[in-house]
Length: 303
Image 1 (cartoon, rainbow, N blue to C red):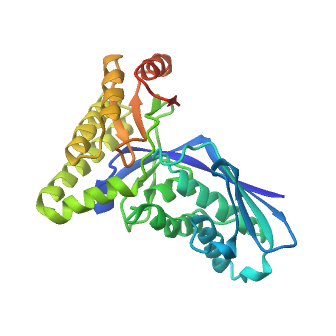
Image 2 (image 1 turned 180 degrees about the vertical axis):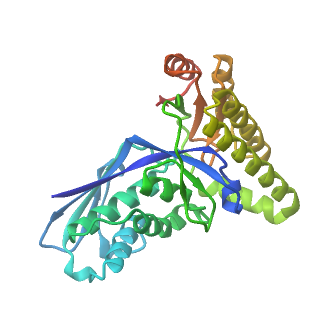
């Protein structure tokens, strides 16, 4: 049996504007992982995803995202699909539609596993590119940031259509992630922002510029290990995302609860209208206190 894995991710600053060419900062979450196992079978290739009760032959559902990542990886390896007979079993710690990169993590894990089955360890750039094609099925117009940070499993400074820049981070960045428990497909808020941009591109471009400036402020704060400045940028970023219409009452409530408990910064993270939010604590002891505050405020999971 072959097994390969991939991590979850979180957006520190810059979501939505990153789709329109502004920078964003994303972080890997190495303790949350998707796993893809391959074992040989005599029958045609099948995929099993027990977490979502899926079990099908690749040939029967060629447009399914899992079938797509298998087919695209085999094509990348110049391997004929008919010659590959295996069972691919996919499991994941990452909640679906929580904006922690579940889809991209599954794609990267599957691509790595299929490649390893054929004796090849995929380069991060190749795994990212393969996963990006499948991300289009999940999100419509993805920026590419999810597959990039997950494939490299390093903090990244990301600008669309530019090579990713790997970032050095402070030794101890005390972050807490709160999940609203509301599952929202990323393509919904991404599509809503796209529609708003089409109606009034000048206004939306100004909002994207403002978010891009906050991302640059956040990067400088990280470089200087200035956590209060980073928290201020995060708070301003959340306010900008509220103006874009991609936050939600539950996300706002969790951010308010974190700030009331002394957080340096709190913002929604990812697509929005559900999913997760991210909090900057003063230190790891304070992070434990913030975990309790988020649970008390209704978070279904806290990392």
